[in-house]
Image (cartoon, rainbow, N blue to C red; front, side, top):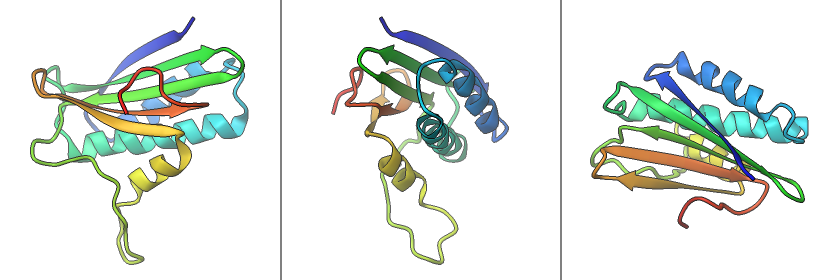
Length: 142
């Protein structure tokens, strides 16, 4: 049976380390090795950082973070960050040049997560960026 944990954070840069700390606490004891936990933390940092830099907050002024852990044969973790979206701006991996100071975040997410994606909810003015570790997603469309 999956264990799902939710947390709400302010829409500011200080939320990146706070979100990492909360998810690290949730992941402790889930049977993950240190490398897997570190990779999940890196991906979470990128997604939360992007939400703060490039998206609006939700109507409550915050961003929401979800972490779901399922342990069957091996642990499976899904993280999701929901923000207020960014009208007219799609979430997409890009190729940064050597001189670019940004633009590598989603390439990092793509390299570390087994899968990742974006769910736009136009009715609720929100966007969720999710990532799956330990196998394919169980919660999100492809």
